[in-house]
Length: 581
Image (cartoon, rainbow, N blue to C red):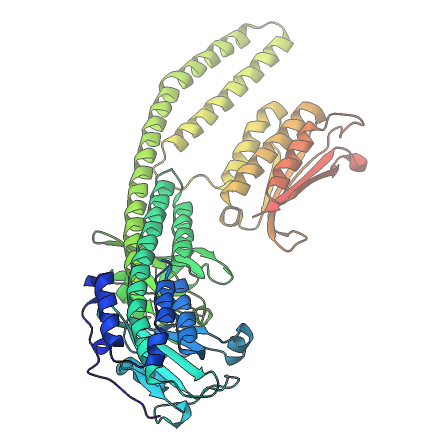
């Protein structure tokens, strides 16, 4: 049977379905049935039942599945499919099938994209088509390998609110015959009802998506304003974007020093190789994003604008500027897996709104952190003034009194003890002055490095010990040791020196901080060694200090051990504390 296109049929140019009520639908359907054969009239109850089935449910994809299955049953077809036209009107955004098994789908491979063959022709010429032999039509492009054989064909456009939504395809009439005019008219009526059902499902689906994105925006704003630091804030944005967009990854990119965009926060099924990747400044998308314009990609793996090493891992993608006012903070990317469906116009719009809200929340969170920092600095200035004006003066006066008492002391033992007290007061005054300096540092000034803090601890310990421990640094200590590890290392050093002073009666202590070591699992680490020539650790003695050292190291993924010291015949104690950088 030759292809037929009924351009004068009411179905080809219907009124806007968004304004038609159920009575109008029924009237239109009755008008279409007038004058039909007795055979078709007998199938009317089945048609009405099919229309009722199609109209139930509000979830879009399940509605499309139900339409395909109902149409196949109504026209007695072995296979059915619905091709959903994409936003460009040039191809298919989705392809729903009925009658093809999961095993067959896997063997066939990629679904049709609608850019060629009969399916592509029906996108540009949306009219009913009936064919006795699909392969004989000049528009046919054939089937891929492992595709089930199909001969008879029936295609009908589906309109939603007057616009082409897609096409309903039926193939392989059961019994080996051809589709009839009765089949065509029945399916056309079903397509009318399908358009209404799809419109309702699409409105419901978009409303549900909108609520999810709004809830996600609220979650991001709440998290960012709860006091998280900048790194945590970006991670929250990436995680929420990935969840809401149903993407393989959520990525936040910030401008780097070279003018490109660096991936600084990643939430992904497979995050390997993403964090730290840079989109170079010569990439065509960078200028567009930094100008505050979104970029939508149909396939990251093949789009020539996507030039990073990770692009081949992904398919459809949205790159949205994080823009607040005229300020572009960075970019939010939500790439989907290769072969995944493209983003709809509604999803693009909602994601852009989410990115704008996230950018505003980031700006507000930054302002809030600035206010909190300002309050802290004001409080620190007050404390520094109090320490300088009150505490140091009182300690200095106490030192003068002790020096006067020392000169008058007749007993050598008293004279010596008072002298030690004066020395300790001098060290205490120096430490308070160091603390005042730290409190008065500007926000942009870097805190004291690890080397300085180690020397400060050993200097403090020199007074009670009666001598200065030797200190040796190996490797770029300040550059390599992280803040968390550095804080715990200083605490471990303080514990080790305290043990040496209180229990060991040492006359010599050697300290080594080495950042060139490697842990057994291959991680780079810092090793603190504190060795003395004291009495060593007695049998049955307390081990609380050593246990504290071990707990600190283990909390970081490291370890702490002890053994013979540097005294004669291995006398004394050697503590070795190490943790990842």
